[in-house]
Structures are given as structure tokens and as C-alpha cells.
Length: 387
Ligand SMILES: *Cc1c(COP(=O)(O)O)cnc(C)c1O
Image (cartoon, rainbow, N blue to C red; front, side, top):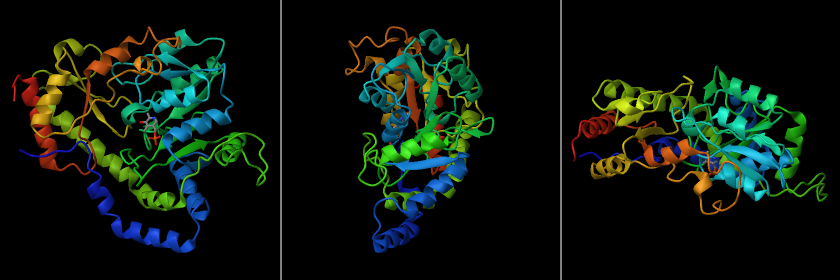
């Protein structure tokens, strides 16, 4: 039996070890450990890669969201539309500023925010929408922009899982008022620690975000507003700068793995693509890249008929790593239950997905025999084998 971890960071980072060591030595000898030219060089290349005017390195993906909201002046009394099926930080950043998340349901086939539901939930206090390009697939950016301008909403794209994903050629993070991403080690561009990035093509917003990143300070020791310390380390920037040019090849390898799963499982009994109408016929639904330019941060199955936990146990017994992203929709999290945030009683798809989803290995360095073992195991489970 073959061991297949859900994610193995080792091979990717070890391949760059010598370059990391050189970068570390340079930073060490520079004595410049806060901001400076190394961070600026990384920011410049990120902006070029994403097709935006400004990119600001920050302390984490969560802080990127927080800083974007602060720069837009969102706070007490304001509502922000967010999908109820995503990682906690999307909602946490809104709540921490005293603003109110409004729970919007998601689409069961691409897992992203359902804009028809969002339209039902816009109210007089709604100021912004925070779409998440979940698992590496961009939302429909054209529909999103039309929706936001029709309702006069600010857009903050949570692209923590979608660095390099595109919609009709346009990168995520390039069409909202702000984009935010994360370099948490398990993201597609994974750092050696915490950090993130905020993007915008609006000069005034960039200026505000820059000021708020350093305690709202401008000039030195004069504080126009209350900001915080949201800086990214130049050491982290130097290390990530080595990985940035590799990102397209990492994303391409992930797509290769996704294509392999589709090719080897197509037409197997009990397995279908997760498209409208497929639910009744299949036990295992394979995720579809509807955008055609996704980057597969996760390969997330839907397992129907209450069999998800059985599949998880089956794969675990075969030493195949898998994880539930996410077991609880945000409106059911203990910290939000009992708060009367709008939408808490009408995000049924999110609740259903939380019982159905299971993510399997998709990382770029997955070996041929490993992905074959994963695919054979899924076929066995769908055909009714019990171990
Ligand atoms: C990872 C993630 C974040 C937070 O990023 P951190 O760098 O861990 O703070 C925010 N939103 C989504 C959707 C994420 O996956």
C-alpha cells in the first residue's frame, strides 16, 4: 500500500534550498529586516504578474482582508456580503472591524458565491461584497462586476486560494477595489511562514492602505488614523520572490493532476462530474473547472447519499490523505450562532456541502503511482468495495 499525503511541502521547497540559503545570507548581511528594497522588488513583480497597479506585502492573508476593509472605511453599522462556505478569515475580518457579515449561499457546482442569493440579501446598509475564489477557481468576474455596480458595492476579492487563477484571461485580484491573497504554506504560492498580499489599481486606495499598514503613520510619528502593524518581512519576501517565477509551473502541475483524475475516472460506475443534474446518478462527483483557468488549490469531491465519512475512512485506511474543507458553514460557527446576521437561515447549499465535501491530494509534486493509487481507490469505493 502506498502512502499519499494530502500535501507534501518537502520536495518543492527542498528543490530551492540553495537559493533560499543565499537569500537568507543576503538579508542577514543587509541588516535590513523591516520593509525596504527586497519587499518592494517582490511587490513590483507580484503586481506585474497579476496585472494590477499596486501590490502591498502584508503579514497574512487575514490581515490583507482586514487592511482592505479598513482602507475602504468599512466598520460599525456596515454590512458585507460574504459566502457562508469558505475559510473563517473571510467573515472574521469583517466582524473584527465591527461590521456585519451577511451570509450568502454558494453554488453547488463551482462552490463560489451565488449572486442571485446575494441580490436577495442586499440591504440599505450593505457596503461591500467579498467573493471568495474557492479552491482555486475564479468567480465569474463579469457578472460580479455588473452586480457590484448595479448595487453600488465595493468589491474585495478573497483570492487566498487563487493566486494565478484567471477569468477570461484576467487574474483574480485585478478587478475588485481590492484583492487579497495569502502565502500560507499550503496555498499555491506558499511561503515559509505567514504573509499575504493586498492589490489595487486605485492610487488613492493604495496610498491609504500603505499608510494603514504602518499604524496610519504619515509622516513618521504623526498618525492621521488608527492603523496597525500589517507589514511583511523582507526575509519572507526574498524567499517568496524565488518561488514566484515557479508559480505557473506549480499551477500547471496541479491542473495536470486534476486532468489525470478526470481522465482515469470518467465513465466509471458511480462517478460523474459535478454538473447540474448529476447528483442523482453518482456517489462521487468530481469538481469541474468551469472557468477553464483555475489553479486547483484543492480538488474537492462531493460525496452524495451520506457516504462522505465512509469514503474518508476508506481512503484513510489506504493511507491516502484527505480533509474536509469545510465541515461547518460560517453561519453555524459558535461565535456567530445567535447573532441575527441576515442570511443565517437561508444558506442551505452551504449546509449541504459541509456534509458532502472531501478534498484529495492534488499538490504539484504528486507522483504518477500516487495519483493512480488515489484514482483506483475512488473507483473501488464507487463500485462498492468496502476496503
Ligand atoms: C487561507 C485563507 C485566508 C487567510 O489567509 P492567512 O494567510 O492564513 O491569514 C483567507 N481566506 C481564505 C479563503 C483562505 O483560504
